Length: 186
Image 1 (cartoon, one colour):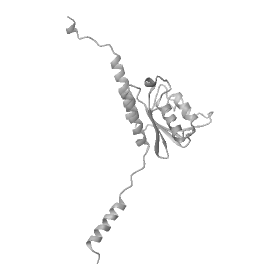
Image 2: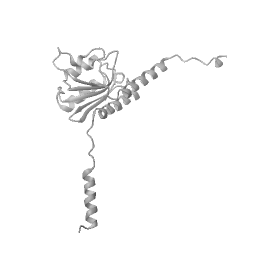
Image 3: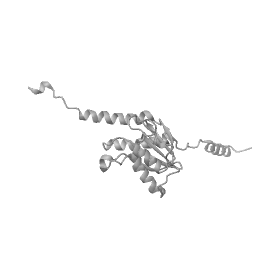
Image 4: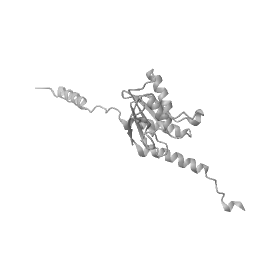
């Protein structure tokens, strides 16, 4: 006969063994980190775009737009994240890396993504006025270029679009002339 104490320990051990393992990070998890970066841009009064570069399931670079802060038109989240990733990898070729960005890349960023040979570009919301990953043009998959990136889109699209819409709504309201209260003009 097995003692009751041994049986409890055995059952406890079985419970631990049968617990579900944590799922590895997925596209939504990485996009959430890109959104956290976009929040930093928003707080700094920059256009709220964030980006992360992932290699082997781990984030190796994070960035957000810093155009105004750095007084540099090229300081887009994607460009800054690529520079960090190149330093982390020790090479300008990022062939085994993915980039997650909250808004569809512009032509400048798309060109840099092709040149660094990023494997996959995943963006949250489209940019119907300047998107270079399919909305206006698709530089990421141009057959005449030496590299083509796989594209994923629409990951946390509503959240990614909302932060941009809120930013520009706020900016427009700050630029509207304030109408004086007619009662106070007398």
